[in-house]
Image (cartoon, rainbow, N blue to C red; front, side, top):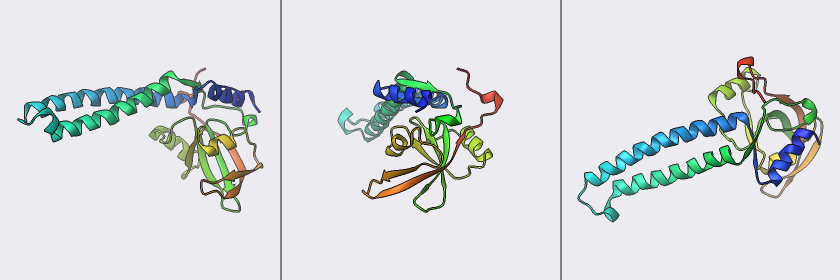
Length: 194
C-alpha cells in the first residue's frame, strides 16, 4: 500500500476524517452561509413573536423557524467537524497509489459496462467548478463515493485490473473490476499547494 493510502488509513484509525482540500473549502463556505441564514432566522423569529398574540407554545410560525434553525445548526456542526477533525490531502496523487482520495475510477460490476466514480473524503455533492473539471476530462456521468462508504473502504489502494469481490447491501456478492484510475487534472490556477 502506498504512503498516501497508509496516511489515509492512519487518519481513520485516529478518528480523523481524511478529506480533499476542496472539501475543507466547501465546509468553510457552507459555514459562512449558515451564519447568514441563522441571522436571517433570528430576525424572522423576532417578527413571528411580535406579530402574534399567541403564546410561545402555540406560535406555528415560530415553531417552523425553530425547526429550520435546528436543521441549520446540525449542518453547521457537520461543517465545523470537517474543518476541525480532518486530515487534508491534495487532489493530486501518484498513479502508483492505486485508488485513493481524488481518484476518478472506471470500474465494472460483474460483466456490466464501465461506470465512472469520483472518490472523496466526505462530500457527496461536488462544487460546480469541480463538476465542470470532471466534464472537461470526459467524465460526463459519474457517481461519488466516500472513504467511509463500504465501496470506499473496499477500493482504497486497489490497482487497475484487480478483481474485487464486493458484498452489496442486499447481501449478494458481485465482482468489481477496475478498468482505469485517473487523477483530477486541475488547471494551474487551481493547483493545491502543500
